[in-house]
Length: 258
Length: 258
Image 1 (cartoon, one colour):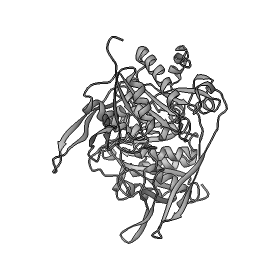
Image 2: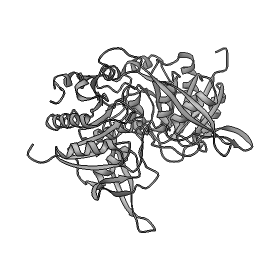
Image 3: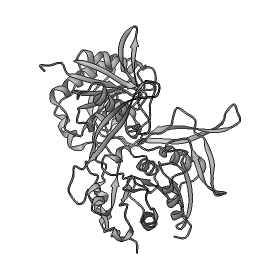
Image 4: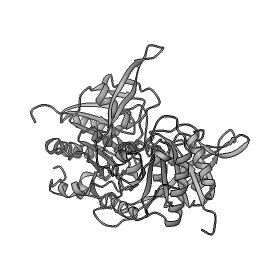
């Protein structure tokens, strides 16, 4: 590469999260890295964008140094605003993360981390989402190393238009990680229930709870690969049309009601 | 059908919106209809769910009659909470809408209306999203008629597991609608920019703006069908894996960094 690549760094855990610090410092080794991230946690926001409210931007410092731009919006907002109003140019790469917690199977639908990479992809920028597959406090050093390695590869090779990479890294010391697998999105989902509770003012409230079910066993499924201590890389695209069902629906002969 | 079907009705425009009133009254003609909907507008929230905050439920009346349950959450929250904590049983159908504005092409990614139907589908319930393809104040009468017709069909025939129907209805009088098309998700997206403004307190803010680009011309694309005055029905699924790219990625020989 002749010129230093411009890399937009964001996440959904918020600009204060340790994962984005690790990712930002990793990206400074590859090019010019710019952080534009939510001013607080925006987990499970899906592909939300803010259209009915104004967005504001703050310059956020760490230890007396400028670290990045904090936005009162979602991860997708950060990418849109970052490209269109803060950087004012198209970055060469969008990276999102490093998320604390897996973004595999059903979680991809809810993930703000993936959503930021989705937005980058929709804007025609090669984009990667990085997650550590554990909710426990993690060491991001190895994941950051892998982020450098894979980001360099993507900067060199590019990605097909409309496709992002969703990367899940086991929360393990480097020597226990067995390798890398190209994977498919699993079907695993949550068995969910609501905890009904009473607040200090005697009013009811509900809180979502649940545990994830593993519904796959093939070794090329994201969840399975991670469980077997592999890094899982799933290419993700956004044509949601169900082409198989489309043909069957033709046979329903749906007409205008008379 | 022997028994009256149980139908969960929700939306993303909020429980006060005229579109959900039209859909609710339509569904009462088919079965036992229950409204569980956001307590205020939740447009463009994507597939967001609320995990870090409590959810509360209010009983909402209209003209002295109980109308439905209002929730301080997203459309996906409403479906989860509706099924698991309010109805306490699996409905036979989830319907979402009638949304004021098209949910075609890229809008599907951001849509709260579609997200509610997504959540229903993920819970194993046949689900349909209904939208009027105009942002202008619309007459919902014909769309409601069509919702009854299609919902009855889906109650009779069912839907394949993991697939929802996303329905977009032209904002036209019944006699100007030319028919029904089974469609694919278009590639149309927004050309976007941010309006930079100054608030009454002299602080900057940004507001997302843009216009949608039509990038398709095939008559079986959702956007095109609606533009040609057809009702567009797109079957939607949630395996986001890019299978074409998956094969190519194998050739990258991605390894652990050494």
